[in-house]
Image (cartoon, rainbow, N blue to C red; front, side, top):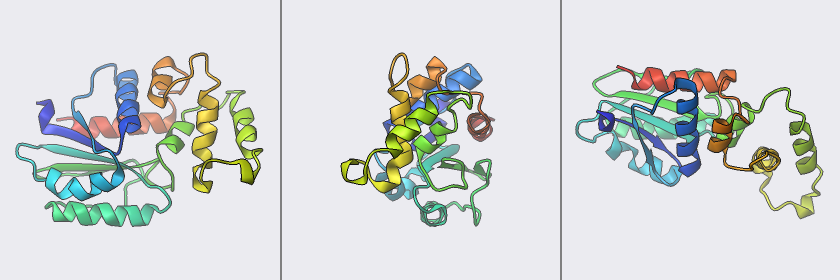
Length: 202
């Protein structure tokens, strides 16, 4: 049953991207339930309890690496251990899956190796031939420091949203995947979809 397989995510944007990407790549509805934890802190704090839910067979964890992949991995490893599981010493580049009585999977956005977040993942889905992307980058980079309203670590997020604003129908990342503006056949998108399929398959 779908309820036996859950994917824990940080927020609404993650939920939307997962749904749209899975539908686009796999051509079907996801065989799992997405649980929006409304922030990384709540995801982390509730993880040991979530792992002990009765009747669960598979739990996926989707989290941003943010500034430090190693620190984020250590936090998640500790919480998984408290929930009765165990993660390897480092994330697998193609997405981590640990077999056991409860299968546990972890994907650190954007690519299990790099610092960053969901928007950095989506950035890698922008077609390489896109002629607007360089202009979106220059626009954001050209804003003087004193006029920037985004944090220094969020510049790639600002660039992506500037690019999204240039679409025929400006919309969220997930909708841009559905519309084909973000390429669901990009290597990273296909790898992420494969991780989901491997994790939640029989």
